[in-house]
Each structure stands twice: as structure tokens, then as C-alpha cells.
Image 1 (cartoon, one colour):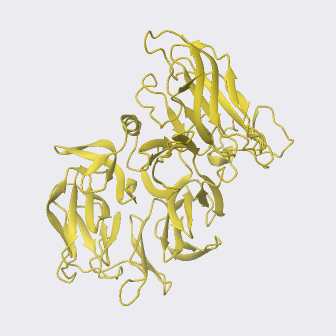
Image 2 (image 1 turned 45 degrees about the vertical axis):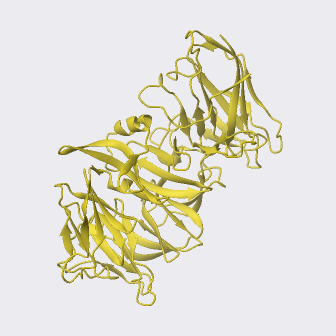
Image 3 (image 1 turned 30 degrees about the vertical axis):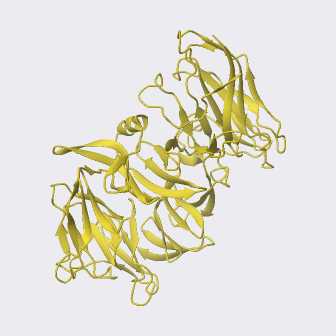
Length: 525
């Protein structure tokens, strides 16, 4: 028996003949103790549990979430809500738009003359201020307010907004309702428009379509001009066409990066900025996937940390995918929420994110539910999470001849069954169904022909294989993972045939812990 390369990241790109490996709803975790049985394993991605059900119009997505003064706020349809720790929503204001993403910033809780108690919301049409102390909701107007804001940031007591032009505007100190007519400046070292604004190391980074400029607080009164001036020579040849992809995490920020080429720009992948210049963190395979997209401008990202990992989660809602960069391991994986069938990889259910009440929360993209996200949840609110690992190719690297596989042993945590009753998932789904409504959960005992049984009491692992590098696949072959307490259960498949380019795929869709440690094969040439 020999251990094979079975663990890893998503690296399927231009051709499965080069690399067929995928990690869907599984990510890598490394261990530094050299005396451990394994120095790495694959861990199941977090699940979701319902926190607040269908606020407002039940079919409207959650457009944005934020936390201010230890209270969660969310925009659903055209309404701003505060959401208490028990999930109770309270209407706080009405916006002029009912669709599209929103951005938030706040200027802090007032104390000793510092802070303004204000939460700013922008929706591409207008800006709004909600005062957390007076509970007054106002639409910003008059003075030097530019209108149609598309980007917003906070720094040193000021709100800063852009509106897809080459200029930005600055509010009065701790007052997002007052904007001086002179408190504006042009970001015009190059003739491209502002897409996003980052507050990075207490400096403003105006990320444009193809370039980025760095500005600092020059302490100029807003009555005479903009408080901010450009750092001399700080103009960089990178930008973005996906402004909502910008997200902060781990003392860096991440975004879909465009590199300036003469007067144009080329998408180069996901970049991390920890100093002032970007470093591309996406692999050639991930870059290939990104560049196959039909639309990138709608991509959005968020960062969060859990159990020692810092994740950058990037979703393309048009092309229906979610990819995740783990800044801890520097590896990528995919996340998918069940919508069509277990063979289809979709985008993740999350449409936005915030951390509040000591928990991670996401808003849904296909209804107005808000979910808590945690490793302790083993399903997406009762819907199975289908995790699968497509491993690296097994081949004869000397003669390229057939490899005979007489046995495969998968080392995985077993005896993980729970007391959750058996449910059934009907597939194919009825014509015209969409979203997670496609998952039809039937009462136990009401077995339907063609149903997939999803049992947490006696969970199963499913193995399939490809003999042509991952182009076509065999049927799935089930193996029990062991009921609760059956820790000596082993996963062994025998008499697996031969191929020149053998690829194994292991999948689990039961609501159980998923800790994959490795795999061993018995082969001959």
C-alpha cells in the first residue's frame, strides 16, 4: 500500500488533463506538530442556521449587512432594519431603491466630542444617514453632496464618497448630513473613474478602473477644500472593474485586480494589498476560471475569520460560482449551496456578511432570510451540503502505461452518525423549480422512487472514478461512514480496474462532520 496525493485545493483550470483536482465545500488545514498522524487534513466548510426568517418581501435578497454600535443592520428590498440579538427586526428607514447592492460606513459612537452616531448607507442613487441615538433616518441632500454615490469610505472623522467619476467629496467632521461645496478634489493623475475606496493603513486608496492613487489627511478645513491630498508619486498601475469585490481582512485587502496596459486594462486575477502594491494570490487555474466569466462587474467579496483561518469569499452571481481563498494556507476551494442536484456546483447562498453578537451572519441571495454561519452547523438550514474532493491523477509517470488499482483505502473520521432522522431528496427536480426550493424533503417512511436518501444516522461516502483524466465518470459506489460511535469503521473499495489516467472523486452529502485525512492505494503497473 502507498499513500497517494489525495488532499489539496481546487486547481482545475484550462484542462482536466493537466490537473483535475477540486475541493468543493472542503478546505485544507495544516498541522505544525510533526508527531501528529497527519500534517494536513481537509475540513468541511461551515453550515447555516436560520436566524431571522423572511423580513419584508420574502423573495427579496438581503442587499447588505453591517454592524454598528454592537447592533446588526440590514437592507432588504427598500428598507433599512436593525436586527436584535434574538432576530427581531425593527424598521429604521426607507430607501429610494429596492434592488442592487448597498454599502455602509459609520462615524463612530459619540463620546467626548468624538464620533457622530451616524450610519451611512449608499445604494447608487442616494445616500442616507441613520442616527443610532436619535433613530432619525434622513436622505442626504443639498450643499456639496454629489448624488448617485457608488463608493464610500470613512477616515479620521470624515465620510468620503465617489460617484464613478474622477472626483471625490468629503463630509463635515462627524457629520454625514453636511457637505461643503469646496470639500472635493479630482483624482486625475490618469483619466479613469473611481470604482472603490479603501482605508488602508490610515490612508485613502482610490481604486480606479486601471490605476490607484494614494491620498493622506493634510488637515485642510472642509470650508476651504478637501482635507486630503495625494501622496507624491503614489500612483500605481492597478485597478478594478468589480468594485464590490473589495474586502478587508488580516491587515490586507483583496479585490479582482485589473493591470493597466497602455490605455486599457487586463484582468489579472485576485490581488492582495498589504503594503501599497498588489500581489496576485489567485493561481493560473483560478485565473482561468475567473476569465471565463461572462460578467465580472457584479462580483462581490467579503472576508471573515474562523478557527484560525482568514477567508476571502468571492462570488460571481451572474456566472453562479463562489471561490474562496484561505489566507492562512494560501490555498483555494469552492463553496456551493444545493439548488439543482448533487452534480451541479452553484454559488454559495450568502449574498452579504457581518460579524455581530459574537457570531458570523450572512444574508441570503434568493430570499430575505438571515443565517448564522458556523462550523457547528452541518447543513445549510436543513439542506444537505454536498462536499466532494476530486483528487490528483494517478498515472505511470515512466511508461504512461495502464495502472491497476486493486484497493483504495480512504482515511477519514468515521463513527460520525447523528440522531437526525433519515430524509429523502428527490431528483431530478420538478421542471420550473429554482433555488433551494428544489430540495424536496419528505417525511420518513414516504419513500419516493428515484429519491436520494440522506441519512445522518447511517451516513455514506460515495466514490466514483474517471479513466480519462476527469472527462467522464463511473457510477457512485457507496460505503458506510459508521453510525454514531462506530469509530473503527473503515472505507475500503476493492477491484477498481485499470486506466492510464485514473482520477478518484469522493463525495459526502449527509449532515455530519467531514474530516478527510488521506488515502492509500494498492497498485501495479
